[in-house]
Image (cartoon, rainbow, N blue to C red; front, top):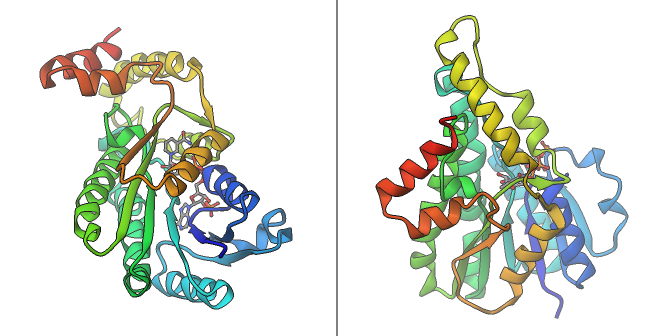
Length: 276
Ligand code: NAP
């Protein structure tokens, strides 16, 4: 019997690549997005349902899940992919922007997950894959709000995996670390960068240094949205109970530093990245 996946944030980037890949491998796909009326490519595919789901609108979550079950009979896999990166100086980031970041990256994931768990419990089976980030393993300046949201997501994912294990429901985290090409992520983060050079000039010198460091990092090899989709597919189908799947070559050594150094040595290493 064909399996069915529901993917959030399928309008672009990783979510769209994952929708294509699962479909190409014979899955039924419920590709959810905020503005389905703009979608033209996925709507042309058989056994692929494009439906509206805004993770900040609980009615849209419930109706997307219902539409998926009505169409395909059951859902086997939820991929919580929708998310974005609020960037900028913390002090220049409004409370509303911070709230919005958590509404999408954390509370949105929780709301979609809670809305589908009754179905997974009834089936005594199901898998949740959360698309996290290297920003959930290590932190970077000018990304404090995004990092806080992905650290929260990592904690939630890990704890939930213990809670649902006995019910036969799996929970996994896919962690792209390093930039992902072919997504709208960088453009959105850049357009929404919180900064106030006139009101908060004390940060200007640091920002110039940080921008140089980030420039060198971005020049390092990027992975593609298809690479990440491939690892989501692997996590969905490998039958293993592995919690975290990292994607990326760790060209900057941040994951290795986090995992191999003692805490203060790691913090000193990271401080060094933005010192010069
Ligand atoms: P993307 O191309 O910008 O895709 C983000 C998706 O999330 C879009 O479909 C967007 O929909 C959707 N979204 C945003 N707010 C939403 C909301 N309130 N409700 C429903 N959908 C919403 O970027 P991406 O790189 O593929 O991002 C996917 C995931 O990968 C995110 O969780 C991100 O944190 C993670 N990630 C990305 C990178 C990277 O470098 N790109 C690295 C590590 C992790 P709209 O089109 O309607 O805005």
